[in-house]
Every structure is written in C-alpha cells, then in structure tokens.
Image 1 (tube, rainbow, N blue to C red):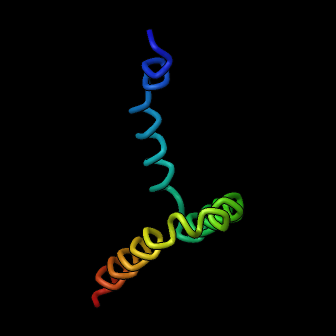
Image 2 (image 1 turned 30 degrees about the vertical axis):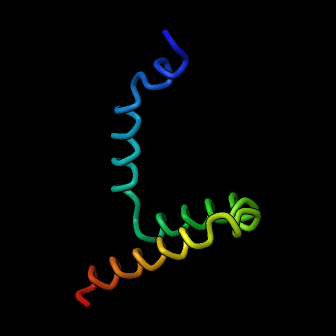
Length: 73
C-alpha cells in the first residue's frame, strides 16, 4: 500500500469531524481560531506577497461580496 493510500484512509471521517467541530463553534471562537492561524502563518503570507497578492485580493473581493449578500445587501 502506498504512503498516500495510507494517509487517505479514514480521511472522510476526519473531514466529517472537522465540519462538526466548525459548526459547534461560536462566531467568537471562529474568529479567534482565524486570528491564531493568521498569526501562525503571517510570516509566510508576508514572504509570498509578490507571488500570491492578486489571488488573495480576488479571494477577499469574493468574500466581501458573499458577506454583503448574506446580510441582505
């Protein structure tokens, strides 16, 4: 069995558990989690700005649009 096959075993269960935990989070918990991730990876984001800035900007625009529509805009 390949290493990749071994890694994929049970992955669906992991994704289901991740989704369950995300749904159980409050908005504040979710924001706190996002901020922790931001702090953990900030140096990588800074170092890859030139490579991915356009994609990040497009993703931010998409997120803002979705949030706008979510609140009834």
